[in-house]
Amino acid sequence: MALFLVVTAGSTALTFHEPTLPTRQANLLAEVFRSRHPAEGKLYANDPVFAESGQAAPWRLHLPAWRALLGAAERLVAPADAVNAFRLLGAALVLAYLLSMYVLLYRQTLSALTAMLVALMSLAVYSDKPPYWGIGPVFTVTPAGAYLAAVPVLMLMFVNARRPWALAGVFFLAGAAGNVHISSAVNLTAVLSLVLLARERFRLRACVTVGLCLLAAAAGAGPALYYYCQTFRAAGLALPAAGQADPAAALRLAGMNILYPGLAVFAVRRLAIALVPMVLAAIVPARPGRRRSAGPGQWLLLLAAIFIVAFGLHGLAQLAGRLMGTWPVATELFGAFGLLMVPVYVLFARAMVNLLRLARRNRRWVEAALVALAVVYLGFSWNAHPLRRLAKEMVTRAGGKVPHRPERQAARELRALAGWARRNTPPESLFITERAEIRAYALRSISCCGLDAEYLYRLGPGRLAEWQRRLRQQRKLLRPEPGALADAEAIVRLADAWRARLRAPAGPIYVLVRAQSAPSPAGRLAMVEAPAGQWGRHWRLFQVLPPGAAPPGALTRPARAASMPSSQVSPNRPPVRTGS
Image 1 (cartoon, one colour):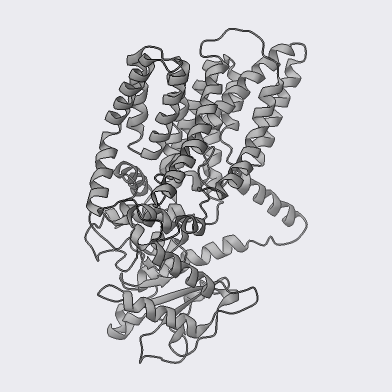
Image 2: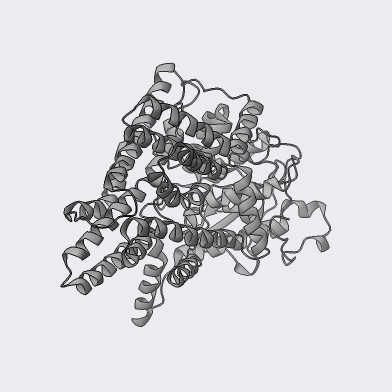
């Protein structure tokens, strides 16, 4: 327990060296802030995802239990950096996951050392694209990550359960945990159902038991199911026709390769990481010994069931949508792929115990090799990325040079810019940018970002085609070829197009551009000067003035300064409390 507390503290400390707030986490924070201001027009008044109110609003995609959990963490850390909410919640999830995984592995191996080492190895995250394997970095603190912390214990309870009432209890708990993330609960219950059927050789009694277990899972997930029934009913959603938009293209814009054929390439790359423990588990010969829990057969069944759900059922859902001329029936089934490493680590731990038994004379050397393997495995993961960067900076300083930290400097500028925007721009302002940090830190609307697809795909499919067009146009304009500058006139035209779509009251429009691509101020495109040089090296902020207003030079105050006494506009006003 003491070691797990130390690891949790170290993992949390490393997150303070992650320079940026990930887009998904920024949107999750925006959900929390928006839920505290349910009336329309109070917050994010001109945001295409967060402006709407009511049960059918796209920003209500995630469950209230998750928003309450994140909101409680945010209130505990306020008024400090809002990203500390993810650090606090992440620390709790890391500790819960380690304890859950340790209990599972110890029950399977009866070796405290092996269970501890493999539990630590299982924290490793080797991809920044969901579904994640492991937990620790800020980007893994998601509803799915919260559910993952309970998966090892749920799987242990399942493999040990034999009586129908015990199985129903496991399914009920799996469903109850789904009130944080229903997709994870659906995937886990689907996997467990397949294993239960295979374990009982598809007998009629097994089918009845599975039916009762699914009812128990539905009862546990009752609040989540009711919430989504109400949400989808309010939105009046049906499966969109295939011609409305290209769902695969929309998901690719968001960096989500969860549809075939792109899914196959993504999965092969992920499986390459799983080969390390799988190969080691396969080459070590089994040796009979005492067991308090299930043998390897059930874990192999779990592996097979996970592949069937993540690739087979997911592919059938995509095929069904194509045959019906609609979008894929379900895209969440691929999330079962995130469960794969739990049985893999169990099989790996069992193999390591067998190896220790076979090498009794050199047991200490084998144990040292296992510790080294765990260190190397974690050392090359995303969890240790800040540590590797710190080590590189130390080497640079030792050589008498100053380390170059462009990412950290750019993140610092963006935070300063967002703080200025929160203090000095009206709530109805719109920022044309893909940086969702503006939502989280400035509490202001942005035009669109890639991960808006998560919200619109499920709760606003009719707007997805227009969103794709806008995002492509915005990226083409604000991300020109290397060495080229953004077109000032095109920026003004884009802002005017947005101005025509703004909700009343229309606020000022700002454009955030990388410094190396920033154009010179011209016409109605005026540059906003940074107070005390807080930004400008990596980011430039422009304001597109309304037609008929084009003062020369740079702006030092936002557009609302023209209608306010100068004494009311001060860049040095104290910041407002986050989420208030």
